[in-house]
Amino acid sequence: MRKKWDLPKGCVIVLAILAVLAVLFYFVAGEQLQVRSDATDAVSPSASAGEILPGTTLSQQFSSPGGRLTGFSVLVGTFARQNRGTMYFSVSQQQPGQEPVLIETFAADLEQMQDNSWCQIWLSDPVEDALEKQFILTIWSEGCQTGQAATVYFGNSIATGRFEIGSEGWEPLQQNGVLLDGTLCLQVYGGTDLWFGQYYWAFALGAELLAGLYCLRLCRLQAKGKSCFGLRFIHAVTHYRFLIQQLVSRDFKTKYKRSVLGIVWSFLNPLLTMTVQYVVFSTIFKSDVPNFPVYLLTGIVLFNFFNEACSMGITSILGNASLITKVYVPKYIYPVTRVLSSGINMLFSLVPLFLVMLATQTKITPALLLFPFTLVCLLCFCTGLVLILSAAMVFFRDTQFLWNVLSMIWMYATPIFYPESIIPARFLTIYKMNPLYHFIRFARMVIMDGVSPEPKAYLICFVFALGSLLIGGLIFRKVQDKFVLYL
Image (tube, rainbow, N blue to C red; front, side, top):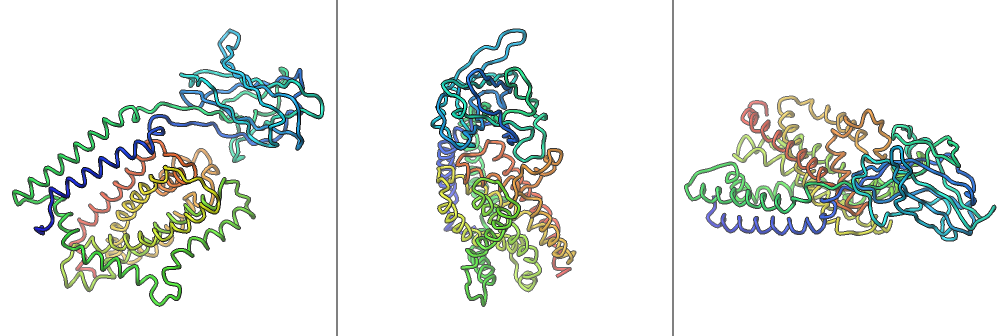
C-alpha cells in the first residue's frame, strides 16, 4: 500500500458521503418508500352509454387495487360539443345484506369537460383497509337535456386488447338496472403502506454502522500488516491507477480511430436509431406508449451500453495477450477497463436523451437524482457478465459468435421499442427474470413518471447487479491462472 494513501481519512470521507446520500435519498424518494401507488388497468372503450340524461343511472361495482382507496378516473365523452348541466359521481361501499354506505359524491361541470378525456377524481378522505371491500360507483346527470348531455364509455378488454376484463373480477356496467355488454372504462387508484419506509432511518443507521465497522477492520488489518479483499482492491486501484486510465483512454480512442466525426457518433448513434424506430413503431405499428420518443431513447441508450460493453469486453483477455504474458497485472483489470470505456461513451449518449426530454417537454423532477442508481447497477451487472464472457472466450473461441446471437435475442426480450403490457400474463414471470427489464423500467420511471420506484425495484436491481458481479468475479478468479496456457 502506498504511504500517501491515507486509509483512515479515506474511510471518513466514504462514511460522510454515505450519510449525505442516505439523507438526500430520503427527501427525494421518501413518499414512494412509505406508500406504494397502485392502479387497475385501464379498460379499452368499445361503446358509449349514450347521453346520460336526467333519470338515467349507471352503476359499476369495483374493488381497490391497494390497501387504501384514493381515487378513480372515468373516460367521458361530450360528442364533440359543449354541453350544459352537471354529471355526478357517487362512491359507496357495498355491505353484505345491507344497503350501500355512501362515501362521497363528486360533481363535474359538463361545460368544462373535454371530449374523450379521463375525468380524474380523488377522494377527500381515502378509504383505509379497502383491499377486501367492494365498492359501487354511481353516475347520473342533472340540468341537461337531449343534445346537451355527456356520456361515458365501456368495454370488455384492457388497454392492450390482450386480456379480458373478466380476469379483473369486475361486474358488468348497469344502466337503470340493465346489464350492458362490458365494463365501465374505469381506472381505480389505491395505495399500500410499505414497512420499509417506516423503518428507513433504522436501516440507514444500521448500514452506516456496518460500513463504519468494516472501515475500522480495514484500518486495523493495515496497521498489523495483514491483508483482505478490501485492502487488495484499494491497493489495485491506487497502484494501477495510471494503467487503468491509459487502458480506458486507449479503448475509447480506438473506437473512433480514423473516424471523421469521431466522438460525435456517441450523440448520433442513439438519435438515428431512435428516429428510425420511432417512425416504424409510432406510424406503421401505431404504438400508443405515452411520450414514446423518451421511452424509446431511454431503452436504446441503456441497451446500447450493455451490448457495447459485452461485445468489447468479450475479447479483452485475448486482445491483451501480449501484456498478460509479459507483465504482471491483475487480469480482471482488462475486462473492467473495457466496461468503463463503454460507460464513458454512454455518458455522452445521455446528452441526446436530455435534449429529447426538453424537446418533448418532459417534466424535470428531483427523481432524476435517482437515475445514477440504475446506471451503477447496470455497470456492475455488465462487469460481472464481461468477466464471465472474457474468461469463456479464452477457452472457447466460439463464445463471441454465440454472444452475437444471444445479444439479439436479449434485445427482443427487453421492452426497448414496445410496451411490456403486450406480454401475455402467463409469460410475465419468465419475462421479469430479464435483468435489463428492471434496469430500464427503473430508469423510465424516474425520467418519465418523475417519481421514485418502490423499494422492491431497488432491491431487484441491486441483487441482479451484485449477483452478476460476485458470480463473474468468482468464475474469473477460478480460471484466470490457466489463461496463459490457451493464449
